[in-house]
Image (cartoon, rainbow, N blue to C red; front, side, top):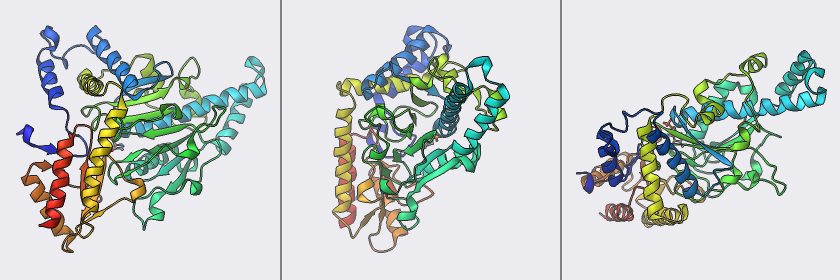
Length: 427
Ligand code: PMP
């Protein structure tokens, strides 16, 4: 039964049972309206209320200013955001260059259109760069998507973590070795690598804004650690995450975008201009400007998914009225329990990532007890499943064991796993 199981799957992840109970009722009949939440119009007042409350609660919980940051509910998952982040921030770069060129050549009618275009083309050729810090499978995928959509000539690999760790992910290269472009359109990293168990311990120093407020345009994929730790939101231009780990169920992704990337401060370039510059034109559902203008309702949004996310946020805020710090302390405590159980038996387990980059959300290790890793891991999975600790199989691309320690894993669940880790090693 559900109540007996602790599910450590990497995503979709377990959701709080009381949230699902409330949601089950809401699916049948939302607030006595006679219609379920998935049947109501996305343009109804009740849908708007669900969206607006979820946006406000997210800002309260993560402690960022809704005046400075827009929350967008996107479709296409985390993978869709690989493309969206690229399109929108390259678009922003083009718009800024366009304005600069126009200013240089004289405002309005004074600037000859062909001249502007030629100058702009030159800037694209010599100056357009997007920077990717590759520390695991997901940042690698995002990098590859940028190469595929934008073209390799514009995409700079800042570092590839495999080169310092025998061809495998598991360490974060020292910032002093990063090859950042000068004035990149953005710098991209994945804060927590779900497959490889690698998490940035802190916001990278080298990407921090300078005293005068200028600094790199930073984007991060926080799909698998959002809501688990305090983040310096002000250091980012864009954060995104799929909902299906710490926020809710599969079906929506969230983008938190600095409002200076939206009108009236900045408008995306026209498709005609992008075509002339031979740069890709974003699908309209991936354009933040369009989604923002429509409060995430440009097209039909799954209000059910937003509702679940909203309920998870309300529960978090009820449990931790001061926001994310309380959850962070709990996440650290749970992770510590599991890692120290593993460390206590070096003859039985090998933790995959380097200590300096260990994820608090996705705990990846190999079972080396007895020398036959394959057999030992099979036994580990079989025995853990038998006592209702499930979902521990590592990602198919890397194998091993992965315990995803998301917010819905209670302290007792982490304790139970830590005990099993001890018992299995000793048996
Ligand atoms: N980024 C990270 C860090 C992820 O863990 C995942 C999915 N597990 C993705 C992106 C891709 O998300 P989606 O499957 O929603 O496209």
